Image (cartoon, rainbow, N blue to C red):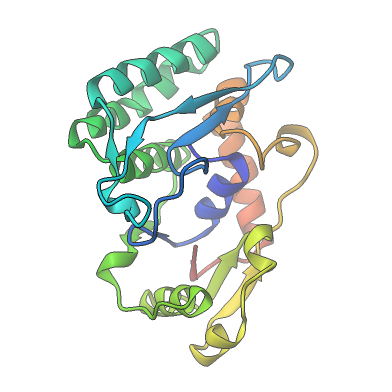
Length: 229
């Protein structure tokens, strides 16, 4: 259930490349999300999917398993209902999330995480493509990997969040003819907590149409045609 700024960045791109062949990291956003209250006033709560690493710390994201998937599915669905069922947009949101609950049947956290993000993007009318890094040729260096993945899609630009801009080496992108485009989002209104909490709160409080309009305006501002993220 990605954060608002992350979802907006993916929406602005033509390709979303899921990094499924990198190390799974506990206490990160790979298997959990912060859910703000519907009115944004109460304390946010964590939705965490218990995850088992078959190979210990080196376990890749694609290999990480959900601990007791049926129970995790029931708990996740219950938490979302408790948090957002009072929303006038709950029925549309609930319908869109049905593929997420089905994804728990695979027992893999990467499948559930991808399904949740895909469901939210499709609810907003995204027309892009989803690829996985394990199916594309790329070097192992952090910046080299991202540059190679972007180039493999034929993208002219790579959308980079504020966190990535602090470490990204532009040279590998220049070698591939790919421009690094910083993705900047507003910091007021619905965006105020967009880097901390899931986009579910904005979707539930404002509705898919209103959020989609904001996303399209932001994508246009970044001139994001031909971008990968």
